[in-house]
Length: 427
Image 1 (cartoon, rainbow, N blue to C red):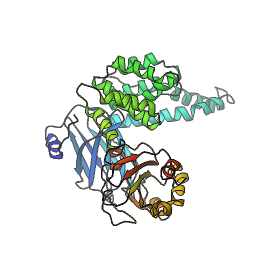
Image 2: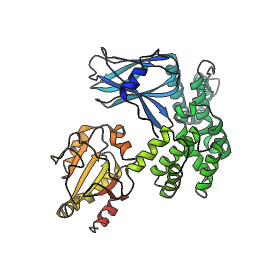
Image 3: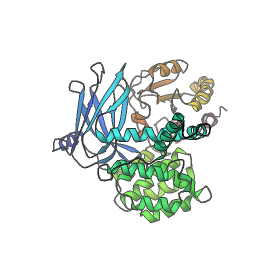
Image 4: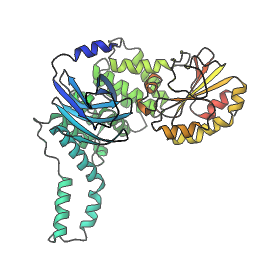
């Protein structure tokens, strides 16, 4: 069963001697008090602790050894930035404007190096092909030809990273280049990926490489035998192990994202029937899916700033049926689907069917302009995919629809707006 950590217990743990410290400094006009520190497990951000500003400086003391990706999120201004830890102190200054992060200035050696490597990698993929073509028109013995040759050599060469000094950067750079870069990804076999996932150390979970590597693994196997590929991988990893369960959790989410329902249901069933101790990572996936199973009571949600209602929560909305839609003003599918829902709004209302729109927007102006045309109940935390309901309701894409009965039980999970209208015989 998943362990639930009380905030006070978590905070008390951080009063112990710190293994390393993370310090973040912002300009005085950055109006934020709270900051939340996250680590990474596969593709899931894991909350570690919350700190408050002291003179626009946040200090996090991390009590354990940790090498991998981390993130800090400012909940009140919806800002975030990522960085790495190599179990050493991290120092960051943020350049901000109008309460938004303009630039992240890393001041510790590891993050400066990682930032430079990623910048060089992007240039290599975007610029090197162009330089190769340009070089054909210049002789090597000219000044410009020599400069071209030097830059091409720099972009083509591997970064010289001291493994002993920078183990995580070396791990990330080496394995990204081998398994995920455009040059090499297509050459890697399924067996090589299985061996790597099986034998890799714990930095696989903290590196952000696991999910794209699993997508690459499935693509390498093709569509002919997805189950065979997944079973082969899980058999090697042993699904009862922590890594096996993390991979199983990631695969369930991948099948959800790509709407591969047959495979999602198969491996979700496998996860439900495990008799071993369940890790927190897999437990969170099981819980999110259980929340939105057909027949389940839809978890209640307390509105933040609702429009077109005096109700305080979803459960306070009284109707024979409710259509809950998760959407965003930047979602192209929402642009085409929600107007069709709007066309039938009066017909739905006449049947005592209420629509509740929960937006994963970030920009308040875009959200406000869009909902002006929507007469149904609207609400948003304006935190995008950091919204609390994205995990609670297992939302991986927009629009996502749920139909609830008068007792807030889920009676249908339509894929598209046409399915919603067909359910109510309005299509």
